[in-house]
Length: 176
Image 1 (cartoon, rainbow, N blue to C red):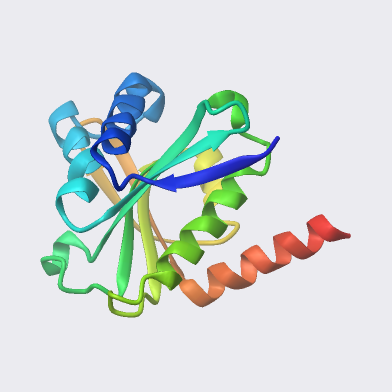
Image 2: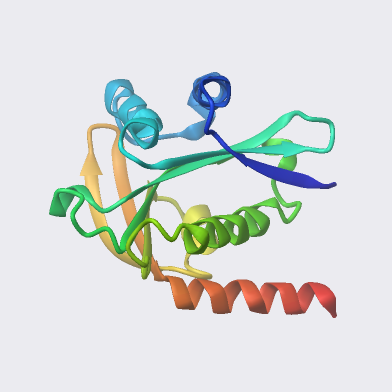
């Protein structure tokens, strides 16, 4: 199946991004109370971040992800770090290569944005479970653990150069 990505630049796409994630809120399995989770969903729309929708070849929304520049612990001044706020792929589109395509698009989108400081690192937080650890430790380092009101979380980070190497290896394997 073919996919394409669209940054949410217009109000229509921004609404579609928020509506899509709220429609799939329980599937997101965020480890925060709703008010905090909602702030992570909308923060890229309010903080010079980026929100992106993924569509399949039938024009159905297959996923969404978003990021902001900087981290809360440094009052968002560490803009060489991109922090993913939300990443979600609809169940039937998982295990299709869409995750790798989304990472590739994310990397290209970050590298193409010349208006921002050069990004050297990508960070994200997930619920603490074996499935996520197996998936994310393929390309990122688990660097932190935290407790929230709704459960434990793992923090991951990866240098942009290491992510590029990982994605290049995946692409080479796909060509063989």
